[in-house]
Amino acid sequence: MHNSLLQKRRLYSEQPHKKIWWLKPILAHYLLLILAILLPYYNNFHEGMTLEHFKHALINWDSLWYIEIAENGYKSRKATAFFPFVPILIKVFGNPYTVIAVTQVAFFICLYLLKEFFKRCNMNDSQIKAGIWLFAVNPCAIYYATVYTEVWIVLFSLASLHMAIKEKWLYAYIFAAILTSTRAPALLFGIFPFTLFIMSIWNKNWKLVRNSLLWGLSCTVGLTGYMIYLYRVFGDPLVFSTTQAENWGHYAVLPWIQIIEGFYAAFTVDIREIRQGLWISAVLFAFFGIGYIWRLKSHLKWESISAMLFVCITIIFIFSFGTRGLPMHSTLRYLSILFPIYAIIPLVVPKSIQRIIIIFFAIVSFMSAWNFTHHIWNL
Image (cartoon, rainbow, N blue to C red):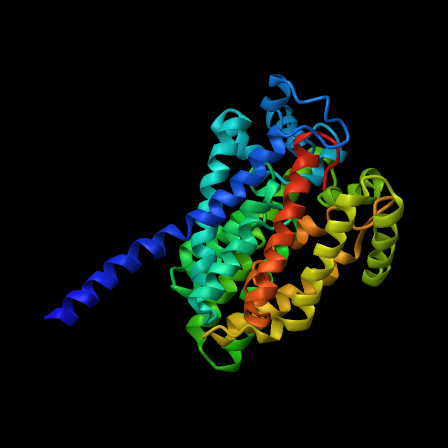
């Protein structure tokens, strides 16, 4: 009787703890953001932001393009670099501030879906907590709290994958279709249905062949719809791609060349403190992604293989996407959508190193948010 009471007491004492730990990374995420907004910029401590500045702290850079497109449509070739999902979202909800609120909900759902992904990867409770912390304070966390696409890419990727594994195929198709209307790098998610399709043929699972084929085809819906629109308006369905070189200074580069140029810029160009942190963070993502992704073992073999291909191919693609005069500009922001990396780090490094990486990520996250909210520099 006494032992039974002790077990019940222990059970009830553990339950609140399991719930409370979620609050810590979430609070850290928002604390870094709030401090970045409220604290004066370190180069101009005597010039704090006015109330008007605070109102626009989270609406800057790409956000302004999305708002312009939502209000006036695609009026220039340059604007076509921005895919239509976020402008449609702004149009539906009426204003960007409502979209910011909805974005927070999307962020919370991402945390839940990440936890489900981590569980499928056979991570223990401690590793799951570390993975959630890494995502919550990742160096680009500011972009997961404002009118940008990153949170939606992660959300629809995880949601589509989750529904496919649950064999709720219609939802998997819908989320995949929406995903490819967010941004070009989201198209690489198609690696997951492609891998499942090939493995299903190998295993002669014809029902899964059909479902994975439809899943893969749904990954083209968002892009196809956008290309049809661009053809009607500009007469060129690929203008979203050609404008990258014509108007944004992007060009193809060997991945290691950009890493070298990014290292040089981090110590010679302005705003060195943030550039150095971003460079180190990007290299860490690439190191763990390329070097250790094979250690990720989902209980579904096709998911493990897909994650490995997805991470490696995306890293190579992103590092090959250069910007003239700004080596590795936006590189880390694009890398931050690689959700398997948030599982890899806790799986391969000891707890002490995990804590160091989390603290480092939090510092860089704060500096990124500081620069963004004070309209100094965009990532």
